[in-house]
Amino acid sequence: MYFDKTNLMKKISVILILNLLFCFTTFGQVKNSTKTTKQINTYLTELEKVGFSGTVLVELNGNKVISKAYGFSDKAHLLKNEQTTIFSTGSITKQFTATAILKLEMQDKLSTDDKISKYFDNVPKDKENISIHDLLRHQSGLESNVGSDFDKISQTDFIDKVMNSSLLFESGTRFSYSNIGYSLLAIIIEKVSGTTYENYLYENLWKPAQMEFTGYSRPNFDNNKIAIGYYRDGKVWGKSTDKNWDIDAPYWHLKGNGGILSTTEDLYKWHKALMTEQILSKGEKEKLYHPRLRPNENENPYYAYGWDIFKTNRNTLQVWHNGTNNIIYADFLRYIDEKVTIIMLSNKSHPNFDGLNKEIAKIIFDKNYKPIIPVADNETNQKYSQNLITIILSKGIEAGKENYKKRPVKIDILEYVLNAKGYDFLSQKNYDKAIDIFTMNTFAYPNSANGFDSLGEAYMNKGDKTLAIKNYEKSLELNPNNENAKNMLKELRK
Image (cartoon, rainbow, N blue to C red; front, side, top):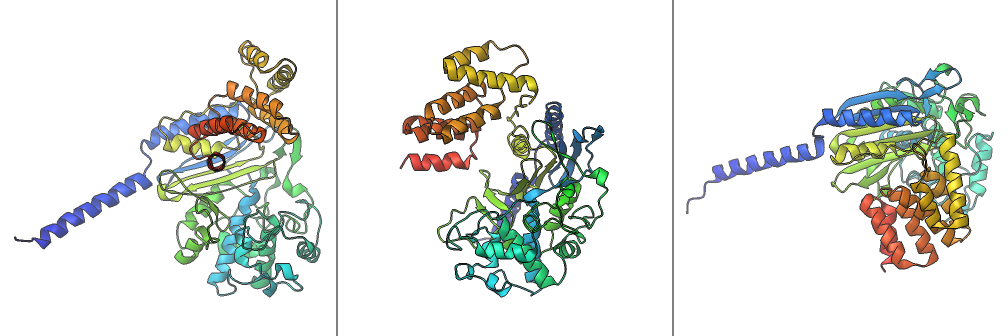
């Protein structure tokens, strides 16, 4: 039988090309990007009407399609947020610290395998095996904090406090989010580089990425451009730069682990730079997203170096981190394989809006998804929510449901208010009251995955395995990416 190798190779080539095109279409293109962009714009406009304040940037198919501002940076003076408004990025700062460590490794000035005893004197025995790698992955065993963000403290006193603190577990064995671990990394950066933390980041990270509006104080920010932070009830918190700061940066409780100021536009430049080898080599970028994992560690999701990594149900990579002090809220969400990036910076953290990026992602990846515009958090709805809680507690859940059905037009309950009250009862082990409150939330918000997750938790704590499973299953049905529901169901079904 004649075997035509040339013809076969041609066929194989065609198949490979078609497969590559398929992969590019699957992972690299969002279909109907014009329609999707319009849907996102409509969603954001509606959110502004019910109180969202901040800036949002969206990239589709590798191109920036939205960069807009909403709400006020200064309500008292009616100053609107702009694309150039400056916000605190919170713990997004950690990815800069992590990248700076890898840059120093590229420059042969340190190794992520180095023990901290190489950089600090008098490291106690229980901490002498902590490595830079452990600090980066939050597996050092160190506590999260040894003080409040804006407490005054010298570098020496900070190091002493950390070294004298108790370890939560043996380093390298578990995960526990530690802000102080990243502050130690910032100190290491200063020791190794011979310059300030901020200056090293500027010269080696931000300047190459053309980020001129990112830092603590080096950019000499126009104070009028920095957004004022607001509590949920609208009261003024102020600007982080007005709090207790050292000469040119926050004190060490915050420095290196949070508080870097930036704009959505600058963060987008950072994303673009990370997509090249402009800042890190291919090998160091691989390490940034895929560091060495602990033995038997669950590989989805996991915390890498300053980024949280998750494989989606589309078999693509989600690279994410947020930052908040419950006043500001920052969210940086990247789907690298699919060329989608969503960046949000806000001067008013609120349950209605903190999940904004994930909602936008659903709009992008699920053509049938229709986001729910949250109820306005105003005085009328606050009072009604509290009144409904009183009715449920005094007359029962059915009376609460009846009252809700007959409520006046344009009045509604605030889901987060009832959720918080439910957890108050849960912490007191008053399971029946918690269940009634959470049940009211699922009645009012039947499409809330979070509502059913909370109800499942209440039943689980009460010991009702059947109803716990039922509600966690419902939560997972509404949100297939709900890792908590997945884990709880796994435990409950043992």
